[in-house]
Length: 265
Ligand code: 13P
Image 1 (cartoon, rainbow, N blue to C red):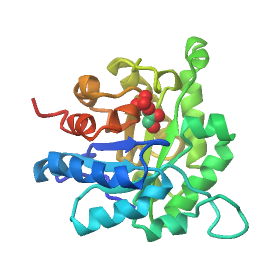
Image 2: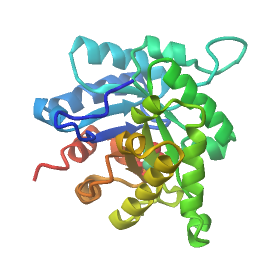
Image 3: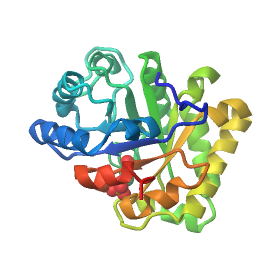
Image 4: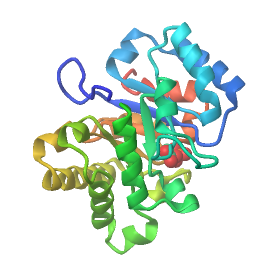
C-alpha cells in the first residue's frame, strides 16, 4: 500500500482525478505529459497526485509515467474481487497490480447506482485491492433525500464501517476514504467546507469507534463533489479534509493542475 504520511508525519494531501468514462489512450498520453509540464518537484512534495483513467488507458499511461519518470500515481476506477476466472468483462486486481496501479476507487456512487454494487460487494473489492498491495479509495456519501431527512451521519458511518469489515487495522490505516455527497457530484454544487468537514469528522469517528482512534487518525479522507480550482483552497484549508477526488474538473490538465496547486497564490 501507499504511505499516507508526508515528511512531517502528518497525513499528506492526496488529490486524485477520476476521469470516469472520458479520454481514450491517445488523449490520456497527451494529458499526462501536459500535466507533468505544469507541475514541479515542489508540487509533488506537498501533494500526492493520482490519475484514475479508464482501464484501456492504463498501460499507455504507465509507460508514459515510467519512461518520463513522472511521480504521478496511477489509479483504477474499479476492479473485480476475484483473481481470475470465468467473469466475462471484469478486470482482476492482479492485472491492475501488474500495471503498477497504486490506487483503486471502490464503491463510487455511480457504480452503486448504475451497476448495483452493494456494501458487501464494496467490502470484497476493498479486501481484494489490499490483498494485491494496492490502496483502496473507498467512496461513501448520502443522497439529497437522505441528507434532508437527517440521515447523512448514519449513512456514511455504516458505509465506511462495512467497507472495511474484516480488514486489519494496519491496512485500514493506509487506506483512503472519499466522502462524496451524491447531490454534489457533477452538479456544480459542492458541499460547503463546513458541511464537508463535519461529515468527514463523522466518518473518522465511525472508524475510531469500530477500530481505534489511532487507526482512524491515519486514514486519509478526501472530499469529492464539484471540486474545482475556485473552491479547492478553502476545502483543503480544513484540517480534517486530506484531499480531493475530482471528476469533471480533472478532465482538463490545466484545470486539474490549478487544483493540485491550490496552495500557491
Ligand atoms: P465531479 O467533480 O464531476 O462532481 O465528480 C466527483 C466525483 O464523482 C469524483 O469521483
